[in-house]
Length: 113
Length: 115
Image 1 (cartoon, each protein chain N blue to C red):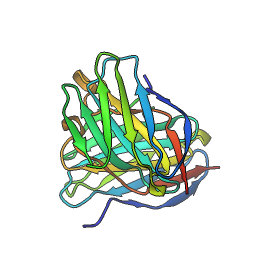
Image 2 (image 1 turned 30 degrees about the vertical axis):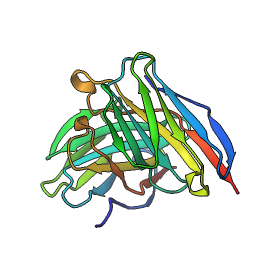
Image 3 (image 1 turned 120 degrees about the vertical axis):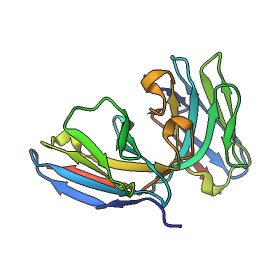
Image 4 (image 1 turned 180 degrees about the vertical axis):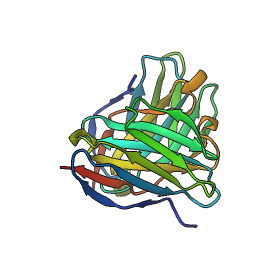
């Protein structure tokens, strides 16, 4: 089941903040966040695991609400380099589901000077 | 440290043909995952290989297959190509199997066009 990302697109001015949400109807084991710039490969941002563990970069923050099966990515004091499409990938866990990521449709973030 | 290398970058094939795409992971990485990216369906997981064994498979028809060699390089094969197979095919490498939740590094992808 594909997770739902919201909003689909957001436009910011440099310095503004944004939140991107990722929701699933299934119980999740982990959520992975990636950013992809046009014509480039997706770049890893963060992994959030059930139980609270996080692995990622210092300048990115995110949360994982296990009860709501929802994750949010927080982009603060946005820079021009933050522009791109943000994808969340969800892993349900259990049996053969481990390691199998299902990605959302993406959120297009545009930062203007 | 060299990144993930995918070859070729662009490919045009005719319906009914078959195609083989290649992915060389980051040195030392033993896990390679393949994804198909299209505007309509987004990023979809194809399969993952670790130490020459397929660990996981997405919901794609049997026309899509892959393998991994002892040097961790991986190939993906699509037989009897259909127009709907036109997509960007991405591979991602990681140090450990994906079910151990390690960071994955993506290659630039192979843009396949089926005419």
